[in-house]
Image (cartoon, each protein chain N blue to C red):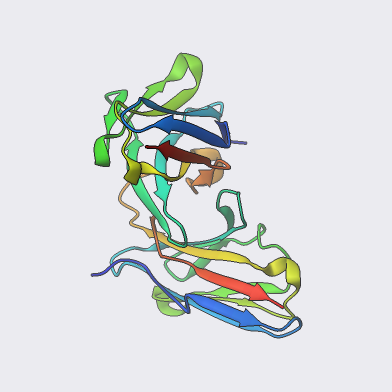
Length: 115
Length: 114
C-alpha cells in the first residue's frame, strides 16, 4: 500500500462552482479525517468517519461543505457554490482503530484556488 | 476542551546548532501527543508520538521529545540541525474529550542557516 492518496492535487475553480475531492485511505484503516489548512496555520479539523459512519460533522465550515464515505472505503469532500475564502489546502488522513494513541497518516493534500 | 499551543511561529538556528520547538497542551486529562513535519506543498509526516510509558520519545531524523506532565509540555529537540530540517513542524494532541481526533497547533517554521 502506498499510503493515503488524494485527487486532484490542485484544483482551480471559478467562484460559485461546485468542487469534489477524493481521498483513498490506507486500506486497513477504518478512521478517515478531513482537515483544511490555510497559509501559516495548522490543519483545522472538518469531519471524520469511522468506517462508513460520519461521527462528527459539526465542524464543517458551512452547509456548503459535505462529505461521504460510501461502504467505508474512499471518501469525497464536496464544496458547493465555492467562495474565495474556500481557497486552502484540503488534507485527508486515515488511521487504524487499534488504540487511542494510533497516529493519523496524511495524504499530500488538494490545493484549492477559487478565482 | 483539549488544545495544543506552539510557542513561536518561527525558529531560526544555524546548521549544527540545537533545535528546540515548544509545545504545550491544555487538557484535564493528558492527551496522546504527536509531532509532525510538513515540507512545502506536501502532507504531514509523523516524526514521533507519545502514548504511555517512557516520557522521552525518540523519532525519525534524530528528533526526540519529552513529555512533562508537571509542565504540560511536549517540546521537540534535535541536538544538531541540518539544512534538510528546514520545514514546518506541528504539534498535535488527541484526547478522550475530543473523541481522539488529532487537534493541531498553529505550527512552527524552522529556518536553518548555513
